Length: 511
Image (cartoon, rainbow, N blue to C red; front, side, top):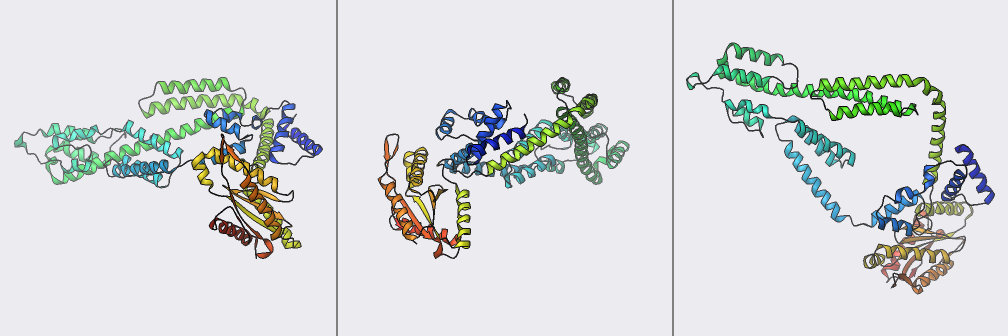
């Protein structure tokens, strides 16, 4: 049986049972049909695959709130995160970010161009508040720099003056190249050391200007004492560093191209063959051998990676004939899965229920408001809107804890739903604020409803862990026909709510 058949069975069953096609009802029926057909769908395993990843306390909370779907789990976690106090963590992160930025700015002033480039990149990422992936890559780049960096070549200049390994400019400016023969200077030995220090450690050859300088020094060692030689020597040192850097970039680019080719072939082998496990294991062994016995130079690494890539390419070519037979089926299955993913995403997106109170959420309330507004504009059917807010709710959370606050919200939602008529729409508008849309109701009818809800809350016993929590309610309401627009209506009800707050709370204020 295919996914499409299961979907058709699901639709037929929902029609036969006459159920409302909410996302949760559809998902439950679909999973039941898939189970009957012996068809395994990962999303039908519910949230069990995620709950095991949480700590025991969070898992108990998830069970307590009866979180059943992935969408509810996501909203639960967002709600839980929003209740946490981020002030201390935020301050610490800002301090650490500022410290890292200052350190990067300091490193940018050092003599090494690679370190300076990394420092600039670090500052850019910190200022743009880069994500964890960028920061992890940046961390690896710094680790690589520390691993390969070597400034021991500076020690070759100790014959001409003090070497400051932390400041290349000071070292160069402090060179004394004017020692005379009567001071016992062995120019030939000095020249040999100096020429050796000018040879790039990575790049294969010198630049022409440096070659000419070494020839001048070899033919006339005393040329080292001239001012012109000092200028040429500074240029040669800078060129040596630039050549090494350029050579490293070229070699890394060559390896990147080869690794990109290797990755593409690996993906092709995995995607196109269901019998490729043995071939992949062979390539994996080659790669593990490369990791355990790392080459000491770029040429050796390039050669060994090229051998692995060539072997992989041969294996892909051998498998291609058999893969063509299965390709069409894989493509069709991929299309079916893509269609199902779109349908499931749409169903999840269309969720209209607040996960905690099980009332309509803000999005659903706004949709109902739009429908009521359309009826009002077309037929003149007026309606009222009531804004309801629990008094001193923050104090409940601070005194008894957020779990107690959640329990109060759940209990109040039940009261609100109990007092509402079938034709009324009630929902959680945000936090401890709720909205009621009272259809075909004028101000007097709205006042009766609001007073019933307020009195019910005042007389109710809100209990949590054996303690009674005193709860009261402030309400503001307004009638559509008294306002020029829907937005003005909602603002009017909200203003009346704040009038009730200012006048002492636990009261109802009309427009």
